[in-house]
Image 1: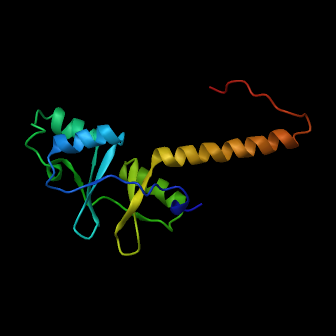
Image 2: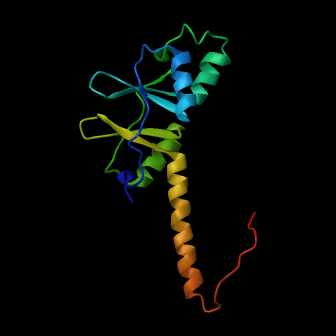
Length: 149
């Protein structure tokens, strides 16, 4: 499976000079956990996550009404192309300790975002399909499974 099969093209972007409180409100309104900071060519230059807001603004006692997103963003986020294998996205998330990766075209322009949640939900769907096949083909008929946890 490739990144293109599950990434979301509806990514929320911001400019680096946007005030933190405005970005945070947009994240709340859109129910998203991150904003991708892009340059004039729509290339990702940073990412701001809800965790960044907590650690770099709230916990630091900073004023979100005067700080800009460039002050709290993680610069030069790791990106991935839509044609990359999904396994590469998982490796990158593990290597870089992140849950979200901007998806870019071959020229490095933002196309969307892939999140750990997207990947987990995709894997869950795959396991459900496999489970249905196994249940239908099981010589014992429908298999019932008690809680595994």
